[in-house]
Length: 64
Image 1 (cartoon, one colour):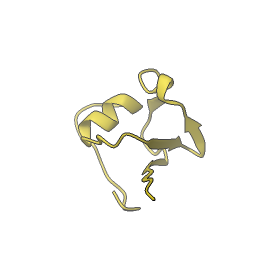
Image 2 (tube, one colour):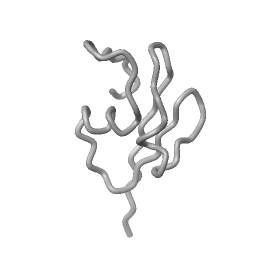
Image 3 (cartoon, one colour):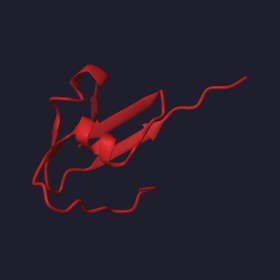
C-alpha cells in the first residue's frame, strides 16, 4: 500500500476482484494496473495476479 510491497499469504494467485475485496477498496473510480497493463473493470473477475507481479491500484477523486 502506498508504494510499499505487500504480501498475501495462503492463496497462490488471485484475481483483481479478490485483491480489491481483500483490501476492502470501495472507491467508485479505480484504475488498476498489473505489470504496466491497465485492467478494465469488466475484467476484474478474470485478470489474475501472480507472485511478483507489479500491481497498482489508484483511486480517482473528482471535485469542483
